[in-house]
Length: 360
Ligand SMILES: Nc1nc2c(ncn2[C@@H]2O[C@H](COP(=O)(O)OP(=O)(O)OP(=O)(O)O)[C@@H](O)[C@H]2O)c(=O)[nH]1
Image 1 (cartoon, rainbow, N blue to C red):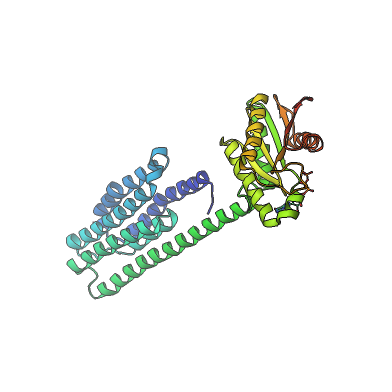
Image 2 (cartoon, helix red, strand yellow; image 1 turned 90 degrees about the vertical axis):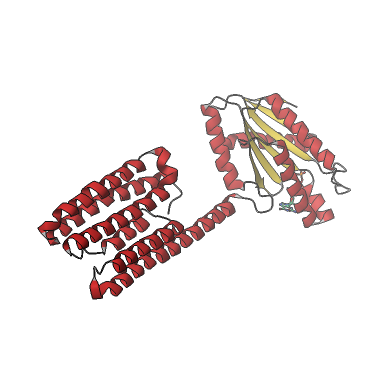
């Protein structure tokens, strides 16, 4: 199982190419067993009815527009191969009283279901059709005579194994996928706020910085830290503290709405935002909107805090041209800017423009 659809598709192409090779090998084996009288109808069946369809399917697998229909295509291929095989068995019997072997039916099913990975539901319906076709063939002609019932049981058993094994494989894959996505979520999300955790935040910010440098866009790092949060926690308790942290996350989501904006929890009550392609004036406006939203919520603060309601300080490192900048140094500049706000005017913001020149 892989999450890479390109790799999966390449594997499928290799598997489907294997199909005609296997049919070719079986043709050689069949020809060595068949009475020469049957060569004509055998070759007609394989070369005129089966191989051209297999070749069409192989060609189809290499066409992008066919990709969404591959499951259906492989199911139709399985039905076609099985029923043309039944037609051959029928002709060999009615024209020459020769009981052509039926085992190929099971091999076609195994190949299409497991190598070409026809999903369980498609497999189920295909196998019902194939088994019905085989039973009809068997009981409308006395091809395998007294071995008829055991042949029917063999085909039914083979097809049942196909359906059941495919069902188990699909279920296991489904469970693995959901466990995988759960693990991915756990490894990238902060459980309290559902924002990026520090690891994911750093990764996404690094990618955004690289992209901004390539596209010659501006890049900014914002560090946001709730003011006097220790006092808030001490006065109202940790649960209320958690509530304030979640509100901070909600406010950040409301302010930084673009898909490319990276928001995450940097640690404790400190958050970080990485923005691309925004002017210094845009950033300033965002910081003001952010403070205004905290004012709007008017969350009561501890009596000994700097402000009567909860506020948040913001330190920003802004660079118009971020080619050659590295994230750690930008975070360091944002942290210094935040320190200035904390020591001089909690609840406001400070922007450090790189190369350095500062503005309140
Ligand atoms: N409730 C809660 N508190 C947290 C969490 N993470 C960190 N804290 C608290 O956040 C507080 C941070 O305190 P400080 O770093 O001293 O900062 P501060 O009190 O906000 O002071 P200034 O930053 O100078 O305004 C500590 O009391 C931590 O226990 C959390 O997930 N939940």
